[in-house]
Image (cartoon, rainbow, N blue to C red):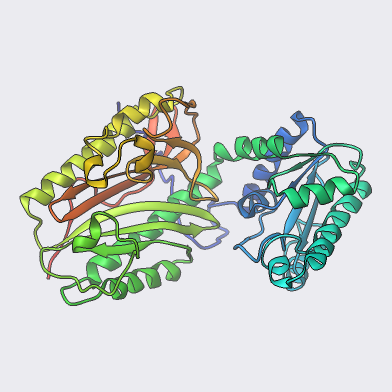
Length: 424
């Protein structure tokens, strides 16, 4: 199978806003995402959905949610397309000034998360939940949907009880299905955001090649790479760099103060790096000097396994068939882990969806897909990752892709054929 080739001038034109060519159109990005969610809401037997998940809130509102203290921001989308957003005092006041596409922004009462947890009293927690639920009920009445079922994307028992205490009927399953279905197929602007964050990650990889040398600590090299990511406008929410024996199995502390040495393998994982909220997951392996034959052989296995999977991905393919491209338990080196079942090997060889979250639909994995397959659709985006031990070290490699009509388009561009050699 041939991989999808981009058309002329398609992709990563620049990170800045300009008036002389079409780039990522943020207004269109917001409008198309909201419309996709709204269409699915209108097809369901719900009057509105209440969103507490940060990626869902961003998908519908365009607001850059970064975690907060839990339920100190939440959003109502009605079947008529009305949006009510609740947020903390400073956030709400800034949003009123800077987000003219949102017309009803209110002050949130944090019924879940750190505020009620820190309150120290059940009576305080009850007050917060009841006040939050009361505000949602009043908004639904104002917009004429109080008598219809409310979808909620977080199944917190206390919140659901408080909402039902306001006379609202709630439905968690349908709300989650609406947002999952809306988000799994990406728009052109969403794909370009993912292509852009891949390009930014490549700037980070380049910084590693220019910085790493024997005697430098993993933390120092990683710090320079992260500086480069921020310089390009990325949000750095994760990632790590490891070296030598920390490369296999993955070191539980991630980046450490270990000094790089000649003949080390080094790999960097740029995961949860975001551009306009869209998350990367992008591995590359480096070697301090020319890699050994054992290291080259291990890399060849990991790369070939990766591309075996990539060649299987196309619209209509099912995840159970695609997962056969990943190594079996012997190839997983399950004996090293003392593992007996594929589900025990989480994160080592799989493909997972990418978007406003690191893990979205689809998931392709021997631990799940054989018995619970789903169908691949055009427009899905994902990261595909493999690894392989090389003596006391290991290699990892990963590509970011979007599913096209004739296969996958590879969004990641850092050379993959061989280990990147860092001369010193």
